[in-house]
Image (cartoon, rainbow, N blue to C red; front, side, top):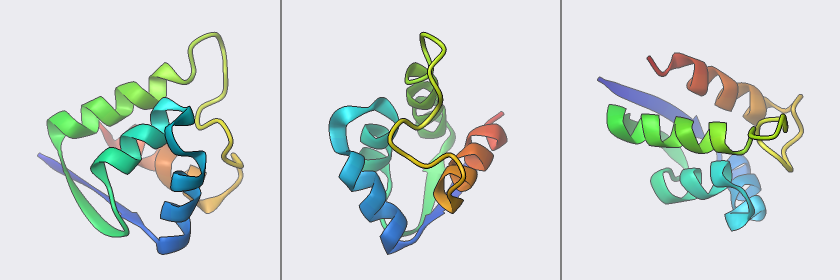
Length: 83
């Protein structure tokens, strides 16, 4: 099973701005680029684990990202789609 995540140039630049500071952005920079990304199931699980790692200690997901942004919504939907 493959997953898709489409990132605009602006969204990818936001991810790169956060850079290697957090697991979520590091994973996305490693596995994604601008445009439609076809993500293998094992890679999707690794990305999901990175998202989860940033929430340890009761922190919010996606530090440094506005939780009301379209990118945050897109990432939450991607995370929820991984089964």
